[in-house]
View (cartoon, rainbow, N blue to C red):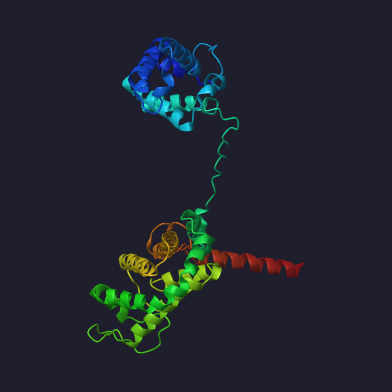
Length: 367
């Protein structure tokens, strides 16, 4: 058994206080605990209290204990982990009656836990959990490399191949509902002038005539049909594409074309509040669609969770272009990215450098 530092024994007040705690432990809690009180029927409780006090004093760093080993003393009782948990629970209650802090109680419990396997007669010890390795995340890369960023967020939200399988398992059933989802999205966008006016701008890739007057912009206008086709293809890719590097870059492109990033062909710039609201609407509509498929509960839950993770990944691709996070890093994503200052032309330095070079040439000719 491990023995904690002596200061814990002293902190609890030594033998006198430990004996008082043990009296309350048995008299107030253990002997009234339906989970374990039957183990003490016919037991000499005076002797039990004395032995328990000596053992606890020893365990907390006090005098040596000469009683039986824990496995021998308890083997005839056939105790379980539930019984052990009840004892730990009652001990904590007794300590709190003496105003012992939660921090000290946690240390006491940690010591008591070292006896669990012996008390319950477990010959094969529970494996000690392996130390969790802390994975390094490169801050500069998450603000400059879309694939690296995606992989980090995917790992954080536990988006795995099983989620991809869950998505593909409902792809054929959801595909016919794609048009319904797209119509629902554009019906929602049309309900608010602040979102519908964005539709009155030229979308990247659209070469037709743009209707800029909101009063004349209809659901069957060419630019709206173009956008609906784009959203339909987007949903199709979510359902069927492998989530590889090509797909990652596509999700990044979907986010980029909605923002006014330098170098983008169109000048459409949707404020993030509308992006966030729309993604929330898309998710709730997808959940409704999945609920209509008549799947078994577990299958339905796996599909819902998988789409939830995908939309969070897509949301992060949008957010990175709006957020100021990483703005201190040259060439980072977003509207607030810090760009390296171009080197300034210094005429004086250039003239001096040219003169030095000319002198070098003349000297070489003389030689």
